[in-house]
Image (cartoon, rainbow, N blue to C red; front, side):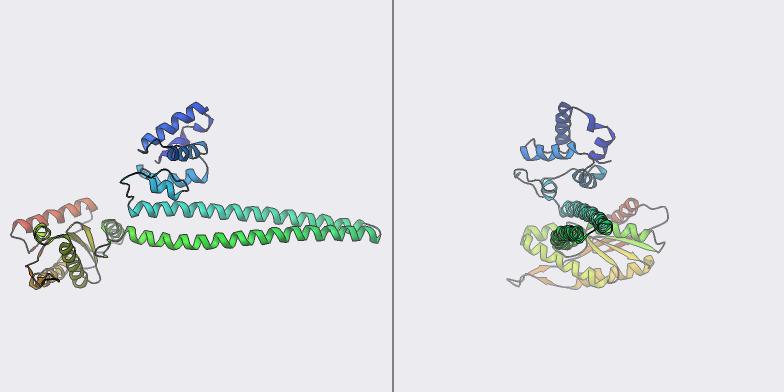
Length: 346
C-alpha cells in the first residue's frame, strides 16, 4: 500500500500542527528525500490535504512501495533544489506523466462542473425573468425585464467564452501531454541501444501470453567472451556487436519477441510453437552469427569469431515466470560449460 494511502487510513487529518510536522519528517525519511525546502513544501501540501489530487497522484506513484524521486516531484508541480547524481529511470518518468494526466483530467472535471453550475444558474435567472415579464403590467416593466434578460445573457456569454478559451488551452495541453505519455511509455519498455524491447516489456509480454493457454517457450542467450571484446576494442565496438547480435536475432526470430534482457544477455519468447520448432529457429540464428566475420569499421581489423550460447525451455502449467527463466538460465550456463557457441534445451 502506498505511503499516502497508509496516511489516509491513520486518520491523520485531525492531528495538530505538531503532529503534521512529525509526519512530514517521517514522510521525507520514508521516501529518502533530503530535508530541503522544496521537498518539505511538497510534503506539506501532500499531507495537509490527504484526499486532494496531489495525494491521489502520489498514491499512484508509490503503489507497491515505490519511492518518489526528485523528478517525480518536479513532474507533479514542485521544484526542489537540484540534487547531484539524480537519474530517474524512464519508467518513473512515465509514471509521473500518468499522474500529471490524472490531475489534468480532474481539472477538466472541475471545469465542466463549474460550467454546468453557471449554466444552471443562467437558466434559473432566465426563467425567473420570463415569469416576471409575463406577470408585469405596462410597457415600462416589460422593457426593464427585457433589459435584465439581456444583461444576464451577456454575462453568461462572457463566461462561456472564457470557459471555451480555458477549455481549448487545456485540451491542447492534454493532447501534448498524452503524446509525451505514449512516448514515455514506449521508451520505458525499449532498450535505447538496440531498439529492442527491454526486460520489463519482455516480462509483461510473457504474463500476457501465459494467460492465453498457447505453447510458450523461453530462451536466454548470452554473447560468448563479450568482456574480451570490450577490453580489446573498447565499448564503442562492443556496442556495435550488441546491435549486430540484436539484428541477427530479430531477423531470425521474426514473429517472436526478442528483447535485450541486460548487458550482453538477450531473451526470446516463442509463442505458438513447440520446443523443437523454437530450437530450429534459435539454432539457425546462432549458426548465422557464428559464420559471419566481423571487422572494425575504421581500420577493417577483424574482431575474430563472435558467437552466443543459449538455453531454451518450454513452459508448463506449474511454471511461474521466475522458475521458467531460472531453468532457461541454468541451461544457458550448461551451454557455456559445454564449450560455448551451442544451445541446450530442457
